[in-house]
Length: 203
Ligand code: MD5
Ligand code: FE
Image 1: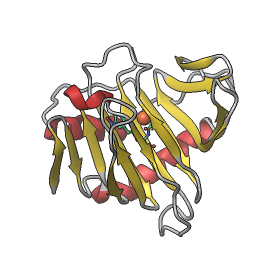
Image 2: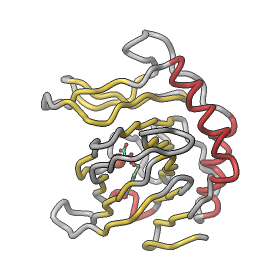
Image 3: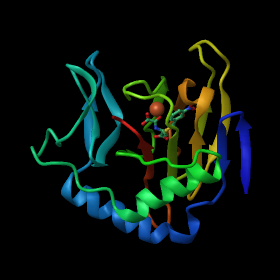
Image 4: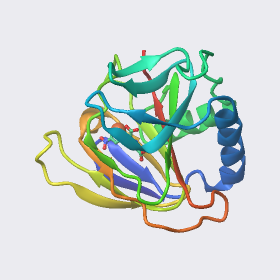
């Protein structure tokens, strides 16, 4: 069912469940080509989340900053193509949330092992903030922190489960957000991991 969290944010509970095994297999194929890796923040901290990407652009971070790159710095190769099923899922979810015509050119794959977390931040490395962002949660559950437009704004805690899809657009696109440390567990499809796919229009 669709749960409206605010004007531009919609949580589509279980939206990806009918094709969860196929999605996991396609993500596995992508990370076979562009392996998950830890990244360093510009400040020199190592991130607890391991990442990879597919699509025209991949999000990367190192001591030089956060940016989108057309190739995987680890392999020197272009990122794997975005599988058609993933592209369709993101476009359909955005449309269901009121943002028709979403054509993402970047899919960031975040892998959380138990204990991994993501601190409060805004997504602002994209060129055009008018496109929504779609995120698909697979594997272990997590508590998502949905903040406001200022870092100090109180954050709402939202339980995200395997198959949930979240869409942020309009004014909600720039909210601060994060993920609390993932609790230990084993998911039948993905084992001791939470995978999050974040679809964006980078350029
Ligand atoms: C995650 N990833 O669960 C999240 C899902 C990231 C990231 O935050 O940057 O890799 S995307 C959550 C998101 C995106 C854009 C806006 C908002 C949330 N929001 O306004 O709350 O790994
Ligand atoms: Fe983010």
